[in-house]
Amino acid sequence: MVITLFSKKIKNISIMAKDCGCNKKKKTPEVREQYKPEEASLPSLTTRAFNFAKSATNYVRSGMENVTGDVYNTRLKICNDCPFRKDSTCTKCGCFIEVKAKWKVSECPEKRWPEVLKN
Image (cartoon, rainbow, N blue to C red):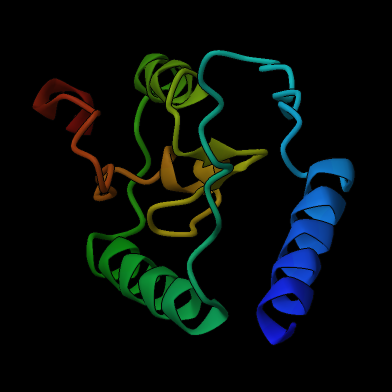
């Protein structure tokens, strides 16, 4: 008698499991885009402050020399196509692109500015 009750309970459980809907094939969500890279985040405020202080020190030591207008525009064009740009900020170093591109001693952290553009 115990075996029959036990087997009836197992049958009841299996019947409940079949009806719960967990065995139904789930719909997969639509893929909206093939590849969507995660949005790059900025370095910490401390890192950004350190990088700016280092760049500003180098700029002052160099006599505060700026690049020519052509070099400046070329640097900005390179930065406009860069995946590490977020609004007007570089997500690698945290610097403001318009300021950094103007300073002659500045370098791209990703080495995207050719050596020719230092002059």
